[in-house]
Length: 292
Image (tube, rainbow, N blue to C red; front, side, top):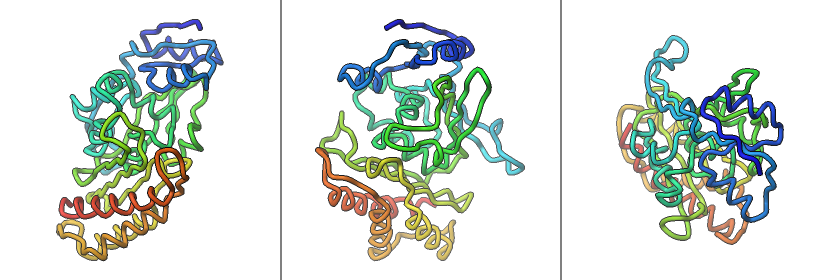
């Protein structure tokens, strides 16, 4: 298996263009598992872990969109979970999701671009990107294109990235502090999610994002639950913190569970996943409602 080591972005893109069957690899925490278990056969590898252009983590008005002057956050595809935890993720929910990934060794090697490119429905950071309405930035030798996360994943471990493209970065508007990520697994560490949830209340833009992981073929947005929470916030005022009642929390949880499309597998049953989602969604709603 020939490995080409590159140090610059242009060099990486040239290599991918010249070798149509090549796989880019940074930390290898997903790809090497697939190879070791015989699920993937790889003929060529382009090692991109030394490409500094992929390791940028920036927050600032240089990424503002339109006339509003909104602060924009950009996380490069080569940024590791450890870097996010150390330098700040630009998102509370993304920081919380990064903390749940694997072991320290995996967090040192695994990257945001790898999580996006693998596109597993159980990928820990992916519900956060969905709830934040993030944009995935893809780059090839032919140019750059931007894809909303909701259009990026097309199925289990499938997405719209072409073979000659790299995940350059993920970008989103700063959503403020009222956000969280909750993951449920069969143990506290080194575990694939049985179910996960990202919940974002963006008071500045009057927007709610609720996304579910490990409960369907892709990351699922709980649209009815988002509308319920948004209506609740509109009624009581976005800038007037108040705890929802038990009935309101229960209704939000019910709508989140109804949005899921889970299956029975070795980690849990579909019924258990729906129950878990209802519980963690209600808890997240209670926690975030007083932070707006």
